Amino acid sequence: MDVRVRYAPSPTGLQHIGGVRTALFNYFFARAQGGKFILRIEDTDQERYSDEALDDLYETLAWLGITWDEGPIVGGPNGPYVQSERFALYKEYAEKLVADGKAYYCYCTPERLDAVRAEQQAAKSEQQGYDRHCRNLRAEERAEYEKQGIVPVIRLKVPTEGKTTFHDILMGDITRKNRDVSPDPVLLKSDGFPTYHLANVIDDHLMGITHIMRAQEWIPSGPLHIILYEAFGWEPPAYCHLPMVMGKDGQKLSKRHGSTAVRDFREQGYLSEALLNYVSLVGWSYDGEREFFTREELEELFTLEKINKAPGVFDYKKLDWFNGQYIRQKSDEELLALLLPYLLKAGFVTEPIDGETREKLLLLTASAKERLKVLSDIVPLSRFLFEEPVWDDISLFAAKGVGLDVATEALERADEVLKAGLASGTEITVIEDQLSALAGEMGVKVGAVFMPIRVALTASTVSLPLFDSIRLLGEERSLGRIERALAILKSEVR
Ligand code: GLU
Ligand code: ZN
Image 1 (cartoon, rainbow, N blue to C red):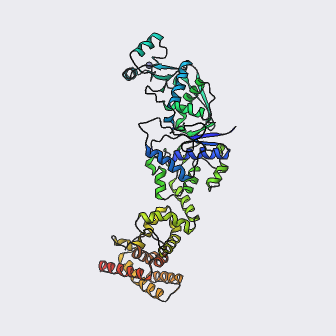
Image 2 (cartoon, protein in one colour; image 1 turned 90 degrees about the horizontal axis):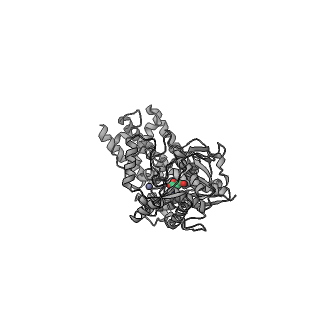
Image 3 (cartoon, rainbow, N blue to C red; image 1 turned 60 degrees about the vertical axis):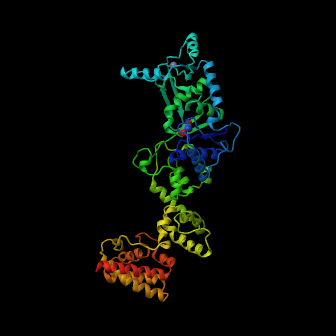
């Protein structure tokens, strides 16, 4: 069998981690099986549709390097692949169901449906939802409604007896009594718009979809879809509902946990390789051990068998770790190209970048590489190079456990060591040893000596390695900052 799978997002919001995971699993499965990956836009909900969401979908897939074999833009033999361009088709198929006695016209007004609902609620009736009023209308009754000019909806005749089972590759058989399935849901609205269920089933069939991999929240729709396939006389595809993506607290992943929109991750400076790799491991594993996979490797190795039944945990810390790993695999040149947009946006540099600046930026990149969790970290880490420090909070000079008096003394004595060392071209490791020795003499931890120097140079307690900072700033600027910081500290401490 030639595998054909699809990702069928509704462009109503930004692509989020869960959606992208669904896209990736479908894509990898298709590639690993030598099958086809289809993209279909389910834009039947015109009220929630947004252009921004559609642009975001294309941008996100492009960023991840996911291409589709059939779908919008690229076309294909089963198009169009945008549901709003297929309305005539849905109508035709819905009417065919009516002709075959599997569906029927319903003329109920919204007012009548409201009244039915209110009555059911008041009576605490077991029967909830549509009361199937129009299911067995006589021809004269229908003619009467038509004469009144009421435009009907089309409803599916859900069997009232028996049960429906659908098989899920992960969850096994899922069976539901037909009387618990939504009573005769609308397939085609009076304005000619299809509902999700109708359009989804027709398209999956006409597009030859063999496996449906989608979020677990669609399981409740499963029996209804099977009933629809049966009504059409079609073979349903295989189902594989994907385990939920949750946060570390066991709740469904949501904004409460942090960013969930892929665009946010991208803007913060997660690398697409890292995100793709990590998201692929949320609910899937290769052998339970191996963690690093390129997209190309997953295109070969992905299997449905290795999808976990248990919900997948999205761990932001773990993603940070992956991101750091991928950042460190980049050459300085590659990484600088990725960092440059952040430096430009911060206004630290402007294009065109001259040779001298480029050299300096490469040095900065090399020095920062070990300390970047995300690309945007380069902004706070390199601010000291492009802006003069402002010491708003002088308590920062004092390392934990010491007072400002100690910090001041340490900085004063360190200044002497640095001046002498730098002037005589002493090896950096030797100067470092001298600073450590100074801490020993003063009876404080080395941090108490290094912290005030760091804060003097960068106005921050987090920075690049100290001597990298000095090298980037130049000796003169570095010593100048230390002098200025000292002057401020002395005036405060005395
Ligand atoms: N348009 C649906 C969604 O946004 C597709 C569900 C399915 O894959 O059947 O999730
Ligand atoms: Zn009705």
